Length: 634
Image (cartoon, rainbow, N blue to C red; front, side):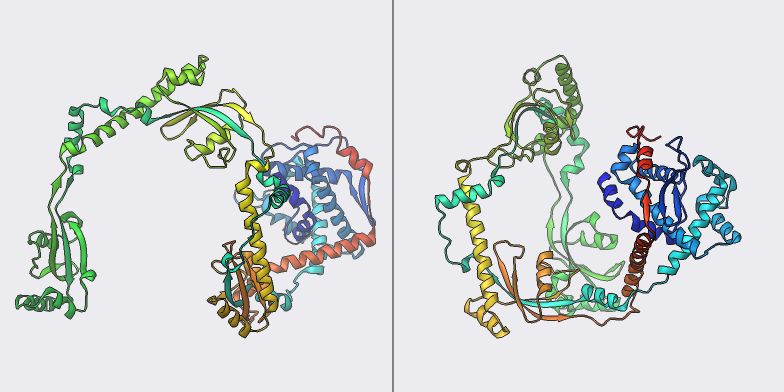
């Protein structure tokens, strides 16, 4: 957050200039933090001065805003680090430059207009939404500002706003800019491409010892061994306290009887359901079946297939229509029902398979039931074991002693990096609560007692037993990895060289087609490529390469697979017609207008300051920022 504030400070003047157009001078409940400052000039612009008191008040307001943003006290030293004093000076110098010109142009605002502006300021409205003079007085008092000073500031602000609006108000976004943005956003390109792969290259020669040594030294940091830590841990889970063998047959039988339905499967039938638009057509269909027409022939006449009307294997309770369910479950296998008046029309149904109801015998599920009972009991027992472990640790027992006393396993991890890798750079996949554990391990010291980690019915106690600092590896430790990386990089260089040579020698679509045929490469067409929506399978860099190419020109890029290269020809580039009235264009114009106004005002103020001259009372500024600079601002 603090970095973001510091970054935003670099463009503060621009934000102030925009604020001149739309905001009133913001005042909130803040206290003066620099006492005893005389009304001395801290800056001069032309014939206009900026008083130390005005700087003091503006600085206190900005520090108060910062404190509300980060929700913590801010000292003057911290405020200076964020650039707040410089921001305030820049704001006041900008205002002074505009004030100087406003005075020389005799700009002014009537008392009635000024009264309306203050009365309509939402900052001074009470709970009823109306202007509240008492509330205004409270705000002014908290800022050590008199009413006359506030009115004077508001009058100056109104005059500066008049000047700013005369310079940049109502500016129109040039059509040239809108056309350029339209073209950038909406241009569509099509390419033809062939794929180059390592198989298109001559065999990469084996690297010599010198090659590997040189490559290793150039990329030594890539092979650096990270810091490793050795840890001991106890992982307590439900399985550690479960004992299914201790559950009696009687207890398991009781659960079996209570949950008899869960061990039973109801009768199920595979049903085909043919729905007719009318009772007459259903009766006619049934008559055909009675006369000898097969079910399959009837379906063919109705222009449906068995798959279209197959309801699958269903139980009686799975069927929504009770009438159809009753009829279906009264049929024998392969029987066809009479016409059934269903909810959604008359129906003929056929049963093609019957799966009888079945109940798993107790003997088949006894082991499963005992496991479930033991697990339920373990949920209560695990907390008792946890408390026992905690008591042992509090009594000074080591993790090894705790594990032995509670019949738990002490696990030793010889080496683990902060990323969860072992010394062979293989992920240790069975670390419990790995993210939390690794974070705790790398925040701990050797032999320190750490608070236990808690998961879903699991607990971990751990300690760091050794630390191996990060170090440079030697080539002898990673020869296979270095060799593989060398071959990979040499292959990439060779692919880039091949693609570059091919592109350099291509000059027409005929040559491109001949190249594809000579190398037995299919030509892919990738169309509807845009800058913003891109194209599936192409990265942002790939898209940028495509849009850097000129029509009918050739190029290459590396797609998602780094072992491939796409050699392409740009075959089409088109931009939809531009209409200024189009909604998106209007939105772009609306978004661009404030930036243009800001840029124009920035240039205008910069020129004013250059012509008028700006002087800063640096000794006074230093004095005001000294004293209790390191104390939190209250």
